[in-house]
Image (cartoon, rainbow, N blue to C red; front, top):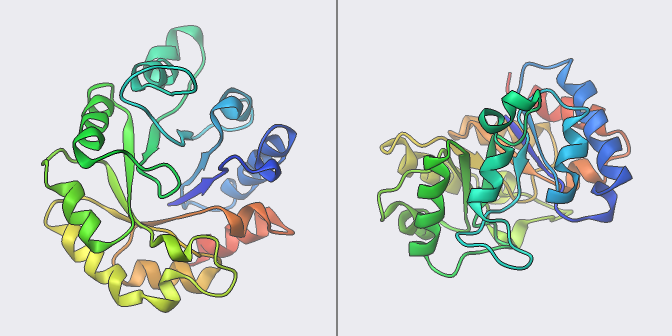
Length: 229
């Protein structure tokens, strides 16, 4: 699977988010590898008009407040909540991304638990193998865990798959005993990276820059999808 993080980049919000999700939709028609758009909250409804599959949110908060996205609000966007209105919303949410960390693992575990209660899937990001262990300590299990060393995020020169491939295997082995699938991010940019991630035990990749900045978005996505064959 391929998670495409739109972040809050001007290249992937507003009208550009529409262009991006349309290109992803064209790519999805030509591959069986699941593509999951993760747009900015403001663009989720618009993206839904052009996307039939899963859409995820970029973050969730435990409590409400100005500028926050509480789980109890996000769950109203869940397909189960919306089906009577003939619409569908989000299926899951990113948690603990390196650009939006939680203040402690106790709080993170509470958010995971809330998402589980509302049947929202979760992808929890870990910056290191040690952080994977800390995330697992409370015994509240997310749907996926992503291994994403922050120093390699958006790197134009390398990726975790090229510079730290053995760490991917270590992360996959850690999660295998818990039955949690591994997603890999940080500098992922081509078929070679995708092949390496799968070879070392990942079931998917999470990326942003390589797709958002691609001259041909559809072609780039299909290239990455080739790495899963």
